[in-house]
Every structure is written in structure tokens, then in C-alpha cells.
Length: 230
Ligand code: FPP
Picture 1 (cartoon, rainbow, N blue to C red):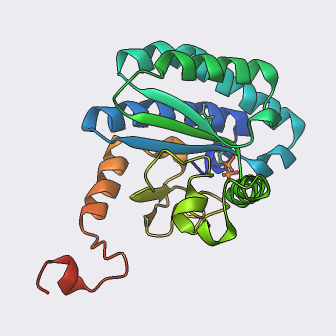
Picture 2: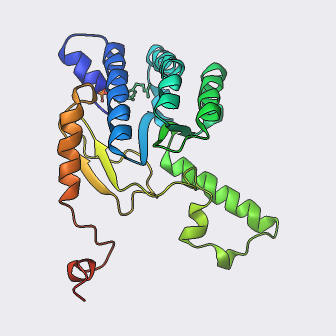
């Protein structure tokens, strides 16, 4: 969800106003994705590296996050959305964590879209943490080094019970992954749009999804194989 700051700067507004508008986009896109039957929506809301931003911006983002969760939990219940969080949870302020955990708890039984917020999240950190957990299993004698393959390691990631993403959308014209789901994106279709996140709306979402429909997902196979001609 990139480009909140640039959106605000272009209008001579404070960055935080851009983030506020970004939250409005989050609400609309979550509702739209849930309505059209997307099973999993994962939003990169705060990276492990975002802690390095000015203290006032970090504080404002945490406040926005808390407001979003308190205001939106009832809508998640209404829309059958299951809420969850990935990332380094202990780094989050205790009051924010409390609200997140409450939303996770009350929506746990929902069977519609799973909405995941990546918070204080970094993919390299996630993979390192998974490797540490695997090492502990080996040290405890519950796993042998020979049993460690990609499927095994994936079970120790934050996303263990989620499918890999089919589609990634990055806004604001940046063409980078920026430490997001590095492992899980191996065969994900990538889409980049010039639109800043506050300007990303329903029409832009549909444009992206139509684009996705034109992609041929080969997963290393040939086009003929995928089309069943071989
Ligand atoms: C990137 O734009 C955006 C962020 C670092 C924060 C994203 C946060 C929100 C949309 C609001 C909070 C989220 C929820 C779910 C309540 P940027 O600030 O890097 O923009 P820039 O690159 O133009 O400076």
C-alpha cells in the first residue's frame, strides 16, 4: 500500500493525512475483495524497517491502526471475515496488540475471506525466525536435517496455514518487493500501478484483476503442458 506520503505531498498536506486516506482505501478494498469472493487478502501495513521513520509518523500510524481495528471489527463479523496478523508481534505497542488480539479472537470462527495485516513484518526476518525454529526442532530430536525441504520450512513461517499468494499488487509506481513475503511470492503474478494507494479504488482493483486473468500460470511447465496439450 505505497504512496500515501506522495499523495499527501502532492496536495501540500501532511503525510499522516495521506495515511488517513490510505485507511479509507483499505476499508473499500477489503469490502470489495470480500464481496467478490477473494479467499485471502494480505495487506503490507507496516514493515520491520518502518520503525526507522520519524517517531511522530510511527505513533500516528499505530494510532490509525488501533482506530481501524476498533472501528472495523464489527464489520468483519458482519462480513464473515477472519482477521489475522503476521510479523514480529512483540515489537507492537501493547495496547495495539491487545486490540489486534481481540479482533483475531472474535473473528476466528469466520469462514469467509481471511484478512491478514503484515505488521512489523519483514520477510528475511520471518525466514530467519523459521530457520531458528527448525534448528530447535532438530536440536530436540524431533526433526532430522534430511527432513528439511521447502515444504518443511514453509510450515515454520508465519503463513504456515495460508496458501501462497496468486497475485501481488504494488501501488505508487515502485517496482520492488521491499522484503514482503519473499518466500511465498516465488510463483506469484506481480502487478505494478502508478496510482498512489489513496487513489487506488474499485475500478483500479478490477483493472488489476482483469490483468491477472490474462496471465498464464505455468509454475515452471511449458504452455502446452498447462493447456493440457501434452
Ligand atoms: C506506504 O506509503 C504506506 C505505509 C508505510 C503505511 C500503510 C498504512 C496505511 C495504509 C494505513 C494504516 C493501515 C491500516 C490497515 C489501518 P508511504 O508512506 O511509504 O508513501 P510514500 O512512499 O509516498 O512516502
